[in-house]
Length: 172
Image (cartoon, rainbow, N blue to C red; front, side):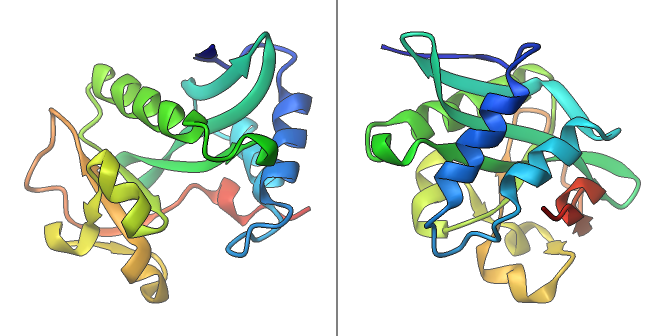
């Protein structure tokens, strides 16, 4: 059975190794995903309640994190990286992490979650093109994959250019 829980002390090295493995052969990977998670954890945009670990029989097999970026003067959540042990792809672990992250963000009264990813995949979780709501990525080339999931406290005035946390600039 898959259990989703918050990251706890001592998880960081396991999460780092998990992201290294998860993105080792992914065609869209930058190779810096594990370093990004480490940098986010050390920065002011880290949200401990939204660093979620999937485990099976006590072993971490997946991880997803939300951190704050900026939409104008507002702190708005961005989701990612999300990584799953490659041996367990297609088993619903990534979906479980996504549902848990969305529910936890909504429970915190966050207005939305931003992410950069495959629209065909993330549509199943309620993500839509961010441009539909007047939200633009910090890099114009990202627009086709730049998405938003509106939550219960969504506000129409949340528009403009979204800038990810500086942790996303991390390199190995």
